[in-house]
Length: 420
Ligand SMILES: [Zn+2]
Image 1 (cartoon, protein in one colour):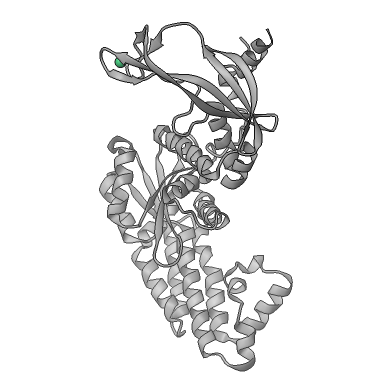
Image 2 (cartoon, rainbow, N blue to C red; image 1 turned 45 degrees about the vertical axis):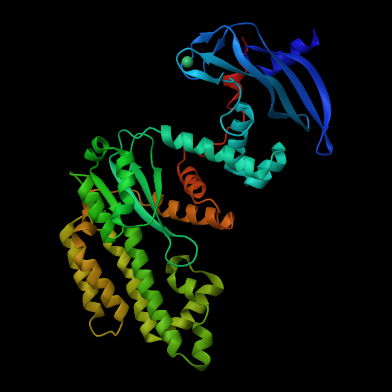
């Protein structure tokens, strides 16, 4: 019997293909596979107890992977059973995904495709509406996030990103050291102490006890929140965040100079923000010439630039005393300069110096924090802003967690289509 081949290829145990047809749908041909449930008792949807006779049934259509290029639907009878314990409820449909009316293989493939392409493109490829694609992907991400392992993490990192215009912040909490390597654990809206409470509840009290280090910005609510929840924690203010504050200070100096500037000098200075803020070693060619002209024209900027370049030296010291001596010498150079933002920066570093020196004892890789920040920003930009905030947060977690982002489009084949 030829339909036997179809049943084998479809690979849904407990169901056979009774008929195959093509029907027009929304102006194009669609494949309809009529499925028949094999004999056997029905089951209660809640307690799984076998029940002999169904209460009622009706026909439904579930979209499956496209057959060649045609939208494919499985037409199947859905049963309702009357369980003596739980009352009337639906019998589970083993191959249907929860949520939209699609099969599990289709849902799994859509989720995989969403890792590498836009929701719209995945919809065009799998012949689904993009809202359906988004719902499938969101559901899969929610499931992964709810079931992900969290044990054995010892170093946490926290970072913020601004989204949209104005003061909208997201806090990204990551595990920098743990059995699964660096991973992004959660993204919570806001950056206040109370915003982080939900994260700690989710993370668990026992797991928080084994955290030894917390890597963060000099933002007070983060420090307070970490100290309140992790008893054995040492706070590290990492290089990446501190340099970011220094670059902000340099940018302020640049803006002040630009506001004052007139004539030829204004032309030199305008539009040079990124050349000025970049590491000097990374500026080459024409940009380097422009930088040299700029620094030759303004002594104030020259000094600010040199001080910025030398400050990173602080992280090369292995001894705390040497680092302290270096910082004092750096502050001395500020003395007679009128670099107001730099003075402010130096005061801030001074008051957080213990946490900065903590990195002499514990080296954590900073590349991860820096890259998550970039990846999250790129994701938001590429999607032109998400309309669904929850979905955006889940997508950021997926992009920044290496084990989640692995693309394996046929992963489900081994689950649903074993040769046996
Ligand atoms: Zn039951």
